[in-house]
Image 1 (cartoon, protein in one colour):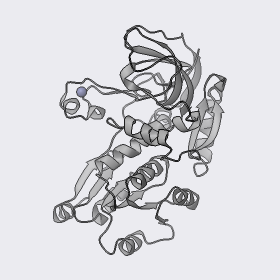
Image 2 (cartoon, helix red, strand yellow; image 1 turned 45 degrees about the horizontal axis):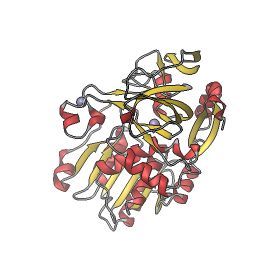
Image 3 (cartoon, helix red, strand yellow; image 1 turned 90 degrees about the vertical axis):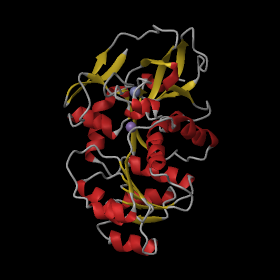
Length: 343
Ligand code: MN
Ligand code: ZN
């Protein structure tokens, strides 16, 4: 079978791999149908991921169909349409015991630390495989994982109905966070340098869109929030500067959610945090968010049918990468169709 492997940073290849088989009773064999290309996959390809190891079959945004189940599998059956929760955790460390398996000391992420979903078949333990409604389109279901990232950011920021939420950045993560915040009943502001992205964000329910190239962000946000500031700021731009801005502008008793992996220090005065009693939190991957997100998808509450903008065959990964790199403003989510998408 075929798989996409980043051999070393900068070198990506279609390889032939042996078909995987079920070795343990709790495992399932999945025929992969669609995989999404994530910013983190691009980082692994470029050698800018601080955590990846090589060679690596990348990919973690997957939807497929159960082809075979192990003898102890209870929740899943052959033919089920499923997505994967791309993490492996120990279950015993402090993080795991605190319900935060996504930051487990032994954490391994599929497609990063261990081989991921850019392959025709994958074997996974049942506990990280989640069934979605069979009526969901493949092109919708492939988005469940990115939306769990948005759900996590909202959970970490304790977003509640009526909160003013400012999302910095209208890329895929910002847009997922936006839609989750709208479901939670927040008033949402979102910023981006691209008017196209902002137009799309507005179509998804953003109440206010701001372009720092034209708008004075501080003035606009003060006006919108009556001088109070956003109650929650989700920084999906992840620069040294945006983190500083987030801490400065967020309201009293507010929350700042950071998603970046840069180790470049920001200059943040204690004053803002203490005076306003801010909560500054990180948000990484997700912890137990699949059930909630799948419910939004199954019930039709989450409208995602316009999110996938480009489709390629697995074999055309180089073309897909080229498109992502040359047309960043036209691309929301690029997906790879695996095995010709028969059926
Ligand atoms: Mn992703
Ligand atoms: Zn653990």
